[in-house]
Image 1 (cartoon, rainbow, N blue to C red):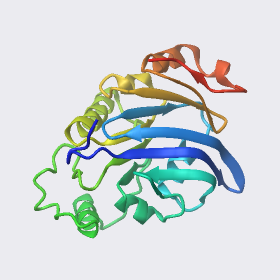
Image 2 (image 1 turned 120 degrees about the vertical axis):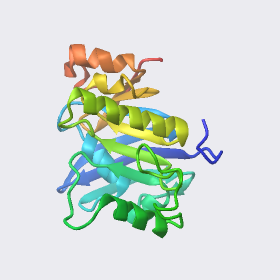
Image 3 (image 1 turned 180 degrees about the vertical axis):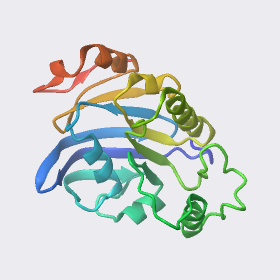
Image 4 (image 1 turned 135 degrees about the vertical axis):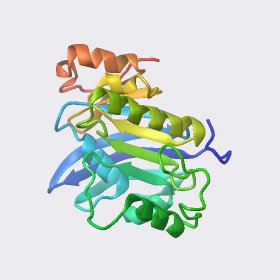
Length: 228
């Protein structure tokens, strides 16, 4: 699958270890995400899902202790968050912080101008999600479904799906609910437990998790793969 400009981007995570609050939380994460793909991370509370999102984006207080984070072969693990954003990464937070006096339009305008893109006023491609394809090649959505009713959840999923098809955005979505995947078509679902990915499968795996829970995945000794 290719991005909107015809170039396929590859986001690779290899052997990623990370700590938060002085404690190692991630114990060797491997992921490969390409333009237009949707990967979903599911797991119980405290499994390291948010720490993974923070480590990938370079949030202060989350330290990568081993492994690599690469965009098109360029290692981003030691770069500050703003340089990762310029490389094409974007993190949609679970609980966005409102900054008094800063409008979303102005923030996106400044971000686009800083990355060499046109202003929001001039960008004709800004539509459903208010993000230009020059800004985002890979997006991480950290439990973006928190606090949403069914209609809002469907709208968020629809707009994310549009980003994959219209602009070739690769999405790594963190969610607790399989219903989020009704309109957001997952290529792969990963189960995270105790800082490790212990199973990978297609969208049917998400339905299974809602029925059986995560009890069977605790203390897994090795990766389990369910073929799509």
